[in-house]
Image (cartoon, rainbow, N blue to C red; front, top):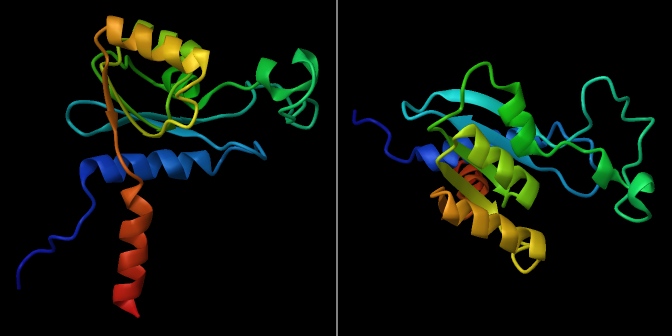
Length: 164
């Protein structure tokens, strides 16, 4: 018998972990996950968007609308920053897999932490000024940007159909 060949690629596998992490987010409108991986394909850290430790998520707003203090934007820690902050070791030289292209604030943290590559799926905010600023900084810092399609879901659906 020959070995299986229809396995997940490394990109699919790590993006799948990012998606799995996103399922921990309690944000009702946007669930984002991140997975940081070293050059040996070892997972270094994961993160998802949510409130900081010690901040009860029942006491803060989840709304996208309203003033700064009445919406989630002043309080939520993004998946990328959570993954960086949660890491038990340096992430310098690593790759971060993230389901949504990083905002300008996360781009700063990615650059400062030494992450060298971003693999992402969605770029739905590509025309916003903050994403344009993010890409400008990442390019200037020499961070490699790779967009992939959401092939994990397609792979799982194919396997389900093969088992029927």
